Amino acid sequence: MEQMTAAHRTLPFGTQVRVHDLDNQKWVDVRINDRGPFVDGRVIDLSHAAARAIEMIGPGTARVRLELLSTPAAESPARYAVQVGAFHNRENAERLRREMEAEYGRARLITRADTPALWRVLVGLEPTEDGASALAQRIRSERASIKFAFVVRVDSV
Image (cartoon, rainbow, N blue to C red; front, side):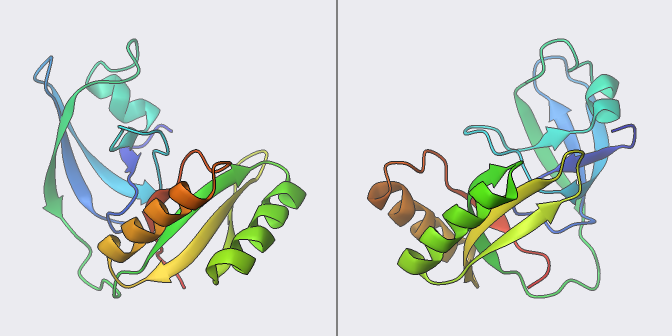
């Protein structure tokens, strides 16, 4: 929380990004070290320190522009999946994983080491972001119970 870091759905971990606040003209450089945000219409989730640096703490959200500064040199080929849920209860996550695997093939749990732990349910493994976007659209159209299905980059297969 107190490092200059951020979460992004698809940029590789280690990517350096300059985040420009379009309203107050402030900017901050951050390193991508997590996945998110998983709220429709949001493109990046800043750490507390980074948000404080550009005076985003009060409002919590802002209109921003991202400027790519650098990407990791030894980057493995990108793979994308669709996140269909996140649970603090592993049994609930496992139940959804089984349902999604039965309908869409590959589905797995990824643990985020928060306190308490967070279990993310990922479906598919696509070589392109467009392929994962098509899967996300299919899931949203076929499963009314899935309100949010987001494309995420999978950094380890």
